[in-house]
Image (cartoon, rainbow, N blue to C red; front, side):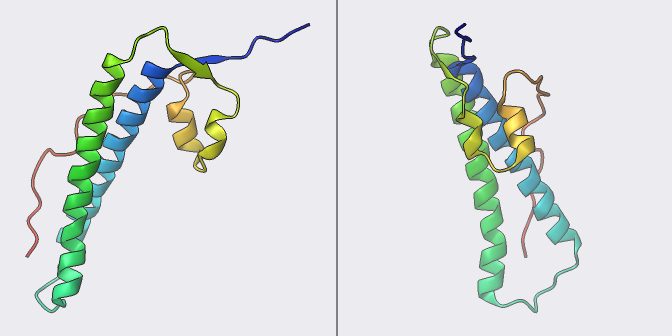
Length: 120
């Protein structure tokens, strides 16, 4: 007896990747806020300040990539799919693999940029 392989709609999978990127952007915003609230003062070297400020660039990049991939998912024909076998094996973190798998429901959350964080 031949078992039918599970197929994944590429548009759904792509939308889930976009949501994961936006979730990472939210984590980056939380990191920025935590660093801001930690009471760091002007005793930091210019290089450390520059490195900390790069978190904002990471946040903006994740937001933009998440929005781009989310929009891309709406342009992918619904009939396109791929085999599910082994596709999640490349993902080390189980929670990400679960959130990418269409068998599991997802929660839509607001975008990360709900406020600016000022650095020094």
